Length: 120
Ligand code: T3P
Image (cartoon, rainbow, N blue to C red; front, side, top):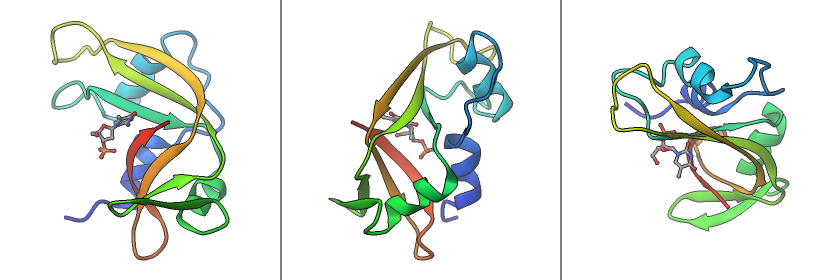
């Protein structure tokens, strides 16, 4: 089935950044169901408003980046979680990297984000 905006939000939207103590990624990857059936290898959470993220799908907030992708005109604060350790089965352990980056996403025909590709 086609990727959905709701799934994009579940996987990639967290604004303001949730206060879960240290080990943000370990907690959030589990909370958002990204530890099943196996630990997702890489996942980025965007700490920006829905309006600002949606705007990347329009000329006011983003521009074409080829292959049906769009890149934001301004950086977002993001946290990228990277799986660490050998086992891909839960409990999943992640490293956290919070930074300011341009996001590369795909949008659907309604102008909503449906896929996170990378951040630069
Ligand atoms: P999804 O399409 O479910 O959002 O590229 C494979 C997956 O990894 C894809 O998942 C997006 C995710 N990903 C991030 O969330 N952040 C990154 O920086 C990269 C490279 C991939």
